[in-house]
Image 1 (tube, rainbow, N blue to C red):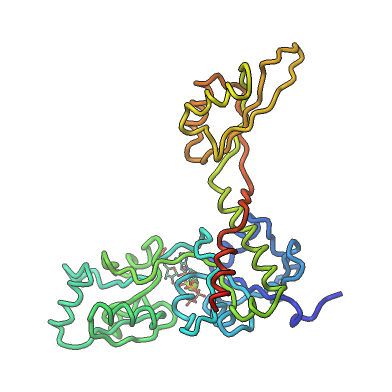
Image 2 (cartoon, helix red, strand yellow):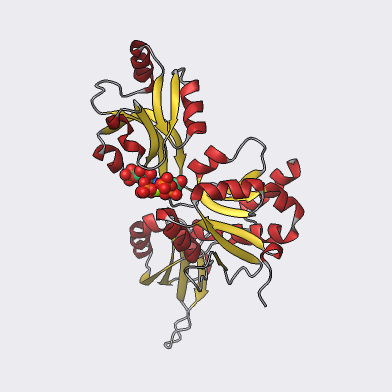
Length: 336
Ligand SMILES: Nc1ncnc2c1ncn2[C@@H]1O[C@H](COP(=O)(O)OP(=O)(O)OP(=O)(O)O)[C@@H](O)[C@H]1O
Ligand SMILES: O=P(O)(O)OC[C@H]1O[C@H](OP(=O)(O)OP(=O)(O)O)[C@H](O)[C@@H]1O
Ligand SMILES: [Mg+2]
């Protein structure tokens, strides 16, 4: 039975661009695969979260929908969140770093403006110009605030589409735009200011405060989303290592292992008896979780303490007692 939309908790995902694919891939990696039977349909589901309906919107529209409460949750970029969240606190950021969609909103000036490579030099340039700076941007709120704080007289020119060409065409002096590799700026003979980062950005999980305060279902979805996301992100950079070791007792093995910096593990090694055919009672299996970046050291250390037959497997989730951001969310809700 298809439940009417209004009874279901709604999560909006980016409908286009690189953020769309990355968001679906991220949720799948977290174990929250999105099921969209008909690519033309605007709604979908996450089978492991039955009470949820998934919608698809442009990244900036997701912010407006969550802010105004027509959607309960969203995944979109911090840049558009900070640009459009408004001042009334109706939008909450539940997780500020989902680990994809990294970019930054930056001020960029024509390469030919020699020496104008910092905010201070830009301010000096505008004083010499003797008129306000014309800035083309899709982010008037963030850009205006940044330039006011920098004491730079300016006029904001709202630009849709390829605003990188604005200085070349001549309807703006400089731009503020999203930058990740910097290729678009270089292609348009623009240069970011060294201290011109207006807003670092990556994908984030947002929610409507009133929905969380009013709907137990929404609160439950918030917990499940944060459980999966936090456990996945915590585990993403870890690996589980299994090795065989000979020793006189688990405690003696642990003492040997604790002499090694990397393989001491999260709390300590898990040590279990290995029943070998020969009946030798001194065989043990050791299991430790180590950062992926320190795998090589871990293997060397295990060998150093007599480890052999080392097996390495990825870790899908690490669930702590409580998802820290869920606890923080409850605190923020209580503070009103
Ligand atoms: N180069 C990039 N690298 C990483 N993330 C990006 C990049 N460009 C955009 N993003 C992220 O994706 C979101 C949507 O990107 P984008 O600006 O392309 O929106 P859009 O819906 O395509 O709007 P437009 O059609 O005006 O480009 C941005 O808000 C930002 O969070
Ligand atoms: O620093 P770079 O790696 O060059 O990325 C920056 C560009 O990426 C985004 O555009 P997008 O790729 O979404 O294309 P679009 O302009 O069509 O939205 C953004 O609007 C910048 O133009
Ligand atoms: Mg785009």
